[in-house]
Image 1 (cartoon, rainbow, N blue to C red):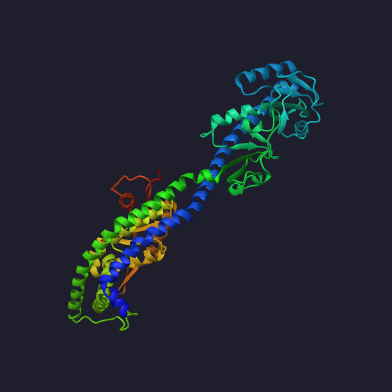
Image 2: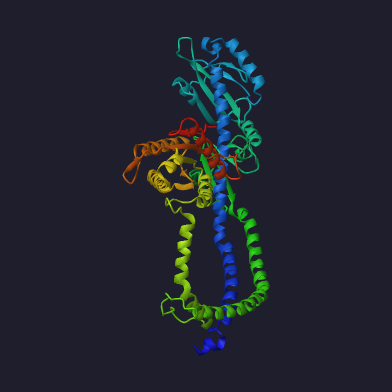
Length: 532
């Protein structure tokens, strides 16, 4: 205690200065440490997700290209000349096709016994009956084969093939299109937004198909391969160490055909290059902020001390007014003198003031007659409800209800009976809706209901149930049962605002318009705004 007194920690002034400096310095230091260490993992995670997302987009591009090639070869296989075995006609049709498809180097037709009969890029009479794509064609399936070297070009190629049926519907051979991988490489460079991103296309065995620079890494005709540990990675990405000892981020997505995959990997050091510069600036900025903030904090403390001392005297004055105290006598341990006195003074009035505030707040949003929310709360709480539904992408429907012939009830049975009818209607509506919905007395004999997560059709269904329920349950006033019916207008929220300045103004106005349509049509009915 003596040390605390010497340091001034038993006074408000000493504690304010100590803790203010601590609260200014500590968050800045923690933020710098957090950014320096923890944020590193966040940066890597964000890059991993970016890789996976980028590869998913590239997958759609390559699938589109593959679908186009299969569509081409299947179109050629269905030509009438292919069904009839018209080789001369097929040769002309193939060459016409190549005039409009510059990326295709050749088109070939193979007979049912496995010999090439038409080939726009090489001599015919070559036996292909032992090839995998010929076996697939005999089984009635199209095929995509990689790992081949073109006989005439000497370049790595892939083959798209489709079976041919003869005039009797039997196997009549096949048509295939050899595509050079450098053509695929050029197509990918044109199709991708970032050709330099390092994305690799490989087959199911890991042989790199594109880009061609990687495909020629092992020689002019050989193919380099994707490392097995990277080939087995999932589309969510992972961290690994390459043969050179570098930490890498990699991701793989499958194209779903013949085992083709898209692979991308990049060094972690490149990902973190910008992050390290940012971390350095954060540390330097933190130190500069502490140095600059210290004199300002001390000045702030001096400005706070005097008002708090005045507030302490004011608290004593409040305590002397006779407010009953509800605070416990034990303050929960030692406290600064000024804070202890302030605590005792304000506790004396806290209970009474708190009770008044709670009651005032409750009455300010409720309708005294019906117990429902009032118009004021409808516009404040309803706006928040619609905003939350819009952010969640959920529809919201508004019901506007009006008690039919309410003036006649007042005129014939008195205002007391009218009040009982309004309370009766309010109770029936409240029972029909969910706790998440908002029911309010809009004014007079009108009520408004906001249905969360409900579309127009659901709103109409609920409105009809409410209307029928009220029609089947007359209101008892003394010994008289008064029939009560309502007209209801229904409108669903939408993305644009036509009436008023907010979505709530708009949907209330449109529901009110539908309500007037229901009343004009004879009352005791539901009318919904026409769907857009």
